[in-house]
Image 1 (cartoon, rainbow, N blue to C red):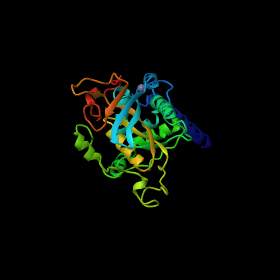
Image 2: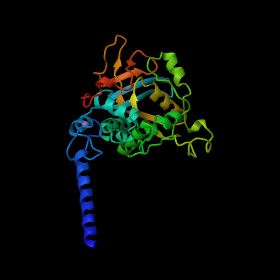
Image 3: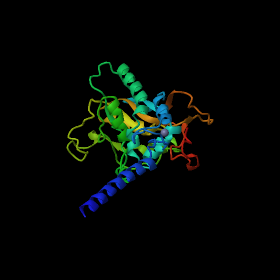
Image 4: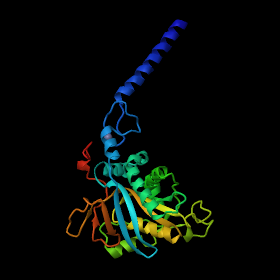
Length: 301
Ligand SMILES: [Zn+2]
């Protein structure tokens, strides 16, 4: 009887080992982004093609011109244009709700972060501590709906690279705004007017997250977002931080939208551009989800 029991136990163990090996064979490791099947890949890895793409990006510099005398312009560095694997990554992060992908974007964020650090070094010779990272806030309803704010996750990545701190409660979005795309100058302004607030806009110790003091006062800050289109949102956040006493030393995004001039000519071959954020002379292409028909596996390369 005892022998029979032992034999059955051994059979059960063998069956579970077999099941485990079967699972391994059935579910080989897939690239975090394109889903390609590569032997020996860990779940948090990209395939060599995706990894190469992100490792070889050249940062794009955009100077956003504003109309606030406190902040005449805002220099933004982006990892790459909003196309190909970067567009796919942003789509998957936001619409397929994959926060882990945002946290894996370090390789794409390093070149623009390094350029930004150099820009800050040249601007602020007396800088003593790294700038505070302020992600562009999502409205509470939208954040609840998505479950996370991708700008916050990218802000965490940026803070790691710049050896700084990401303060996700530093700015707040007071109301949901419509997408800026296709709006006229006055509509853009009206859309963002009073949309954001910083700790100086509320009584200290009051209802502004867990902040007990105005952490933005006299502090160098960097605004972080996933993608810059016209630049109006980034500029408005920078203006809000600046009104709270912060010195906004730059902005950082994963992607920058393609821009076209008034004749529809593509300006994206320029890696360094100046834009009047509130003047839609250069219009950014809409940064919505990519066309499903071209979203086949690896179609983005
Ligand atoms: Zn891949």
